[in-house]
Amino acid sequence: MRRRRSMVSSRTTVAVREWDFILHLQEPLTPEQSDTLDGLDRFNDGRICLIEGPGWAKFTCTFSAETLTGAIAEALGFFEDFPGVLIRSVELGPRELEENKMATTAVVRAPV
Image 1 (tube, rainbow, N blue to C red):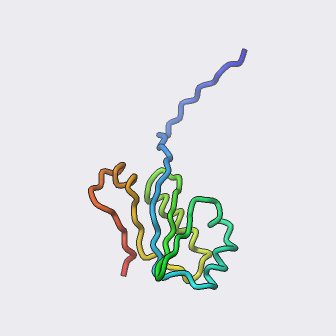
Image 2 (cartoon, rainbow, N blue to C red):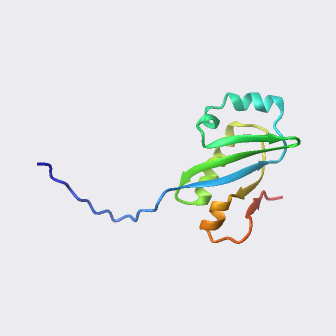
Image 3 (cartoon, one colour):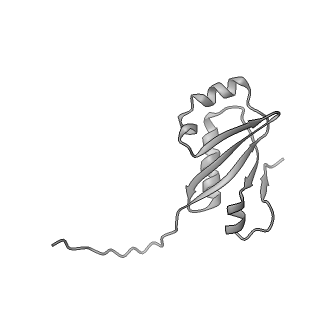
């Protein structure tokens, strides 16, 4: 018979959850930046996905973190190895709007 040990932690546990958001780029990727992106392993784990159109580009993101700001910070950290690519804004998806009791689309613009 196995005995279970119960441990009590003095730390509070914060739930980690998935956050969905969009990172809008300042400009579309250049051909050189697209080649660089293909070689960056961190962009190939399924948490961040490039979507491009005529004259624009964005990354849809799904990151696990305790807070939305933590998830966004982790996603932005991916761009440290991606020179010349600038994020114009962060847009929240419908689920985040609902769960955070926000009435309108939230877009956090980069400082000027």
